[in-house]
Image 1 (cartoon, helix red, strand yellow):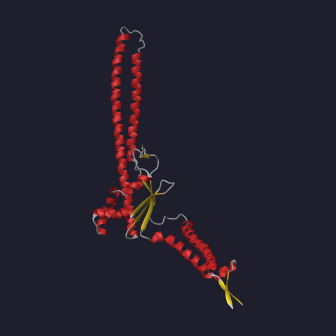
Image 2 (tube, rainbow, N blue to C red; image 1 turned 90 degrees about the vertical axis):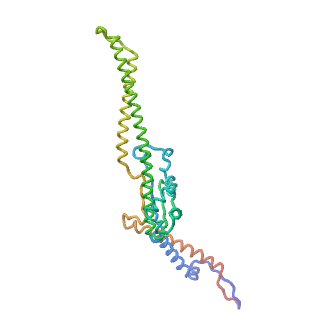
Image 3 (cartoon, one colour; image 1 turned 90 degrees about the horizontal axis):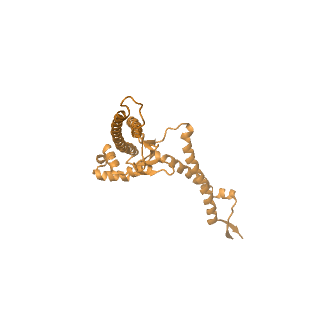
Length: 298
């Protein structure tokens, strides 16, 4: 009696013969989904999302990427890895002493422990820090963002001061121009009186005097506008908001509802379970093809 290979492709037979895969793989997929969900909460990394404050201005003073190229998502990404940010961050947390290494080496290690990426299609930037443990990672993340805040605040302050200095210089020049035109107008008025009021006669039109008068009034209005602008900018420079917005700090965000807490867990678990079921079906048919049952024949 010889045994011949026998393959059956009906789902019931496949499910029964390879039943261990049909419950084992979905279970592994479910477990993988749970690991994906909870791993960020127990790992050694701290991840958060920040954004340069939008609005097209620094304070109330307009700026362009040409004047302040760092005030962009790509500018944030390029700034995070610089010594201007990493060295103060390391010193603020006394990392050279904690990590037992020289300051330059510590800064280099810190640079390797930080990842900063733009979130495509948005103005957001994701910053991830990997420390010796999760607590240290969160401390480094917050110290890093604080240093970034101070760095961009300093750049904005310098820009504000430069802009206000130019504005003050413009007001000073305009005042001198107004004084000069007032003096010219005063001289023209004396000439006007000498020429047209010798015996109380009716004054005649003097084209030069009228031109000087129009120029003086125009210059005076421009001076008033500049003075109002200067006062406004000085007031706005004192009322400033943080240039860097923290959209999400490391850790699980506070949920609005119970479903907000449950939804990510259900999503990851469902994806893992579904992937396990699909893999179980594919693997079962593949095993049936490779290892058919032996059917006895006479």
